[in-house]
Length: 428
Ligand SMILES: Cc1cc2nc3c(=O)[nH]c(=O)nc-3n(C[C@H](O)[C@H](O)[C@H](O)COP(=O)(O)OP(=O)(O)OC[C@H]3O[C@@H](n4cnc5c(N)ncnc54)[C@H](O)[C@@H]3O)c2cc1C
Ligand code: SF4
Ligand code: SF4
Image (cartoon, rainbow, N blue to C red; front, side, top):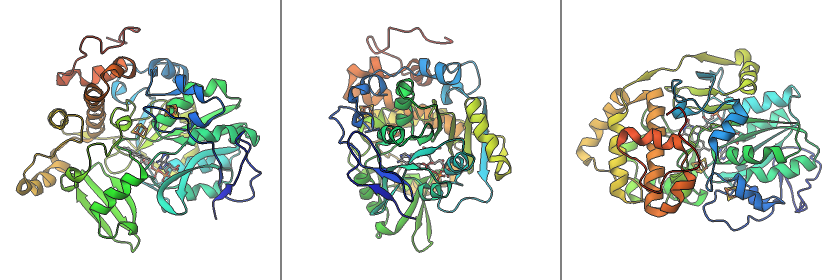
């Protein structure tokens, strides 16, 4: 099954009729932007829509959460301050796992199920570039069997939303989209302007993304044969898992990663200041970090419930677990980030101590939901610290109230002029 690229598709967004395989329409060039993850909006006919769509300008999570889920996150409900509005939170795995999936393949299986049942006409997602498995190519998928080719994680940015116009032009009325948080925010912000009958959103968490080029540099530091690495994941047990083309698997403790060899801007400022880790505007979030070694689902609304129901007996579900205490880990991360003054957190643990700490971390550190809470708080603190050092004027518009609440226990409070004045804190 190959990638069918509609070469020379008209910039007006008209895709050619699909003959076989996922369709990768030719897209316009992006419009020049400042903080931008090329989600695809600037490549649409109305490129100015970035003004309302962009999570890096003046996001309004509260209003969009209320519109999409019927209510904004409620800090008085367990874990909503951290993970956004949800009805149910579960550990989950497909049984058997789907080959080639990042975890067990729940995200792509949901897309395939929607197509199999005729619930959607097309799924908008990404698949690997035939020349570079780590590069994400946005594709329109209309055959359930083609979702298998989209499995796995790509490192880099894909203008996924630029597919909305070709999808509409091809006559697709009910679509699904599998996307990362910055794509999903922009989609939700503009969805009422679009003419689709329905849009189902399957979201994955996202953090620490970087350009595909940077990612290749990172792989080259991890392996003598970086071109043979087929899989990489930052696991919740504080290890990076690498898989190789010959079937070999390597695990590297986080503390042994060559972070100090990476340039300070290895992760672009956008990803260091991204305020949505858990994809709060998706109908269902499919991740792993609260799953204690399995996948982690956040069912956020009725559409998300229907998606989970559709998996039926293909999915094994259980209650998420939680153990350890996150406070010291988050405080240490914040201190390290402050010392790094806008760059990557420095590693301060002496080499001789690393094996011991690497042994203890997965046993005594925050685990399960506590690990996910820790990661969300770290990301919130990073947002504040990196904006303060790089773009202080943006704090007022880019940082939602819930981020300040997440970092408050660690002594990070808004300074004069840093907090939004247009809204009062919810549930304060
Ligand atoms: C850059 C990045 C960072 C992530 N960080 C975390 C994290 O910190 N914590 C966490 O719980 N989960 C994270 N995820 C999500 C996680 O990697 C899995 O995608 C998720 O758990 C679903 O697994 P699965 O087996 O169900 O996915 P699969 O069935 O294998 O499907 C994966 C889906 O993700 C899409 N996808 C892959 N790469 C990209 C990309 N670059 N941009 C847009 N879509 C893409 C694929 O097209 C596919 O539809 C991250 C994902 C990405 C892309
Ligand atoms: S909306 Fe998308 S394309 Fe526009 S500036 Fe933001 S990330 Fe870039
Ligand atoms: S970390 Fe945030 S900004 Fe960066 S790619 Fe992921 S969702 Fe987008």
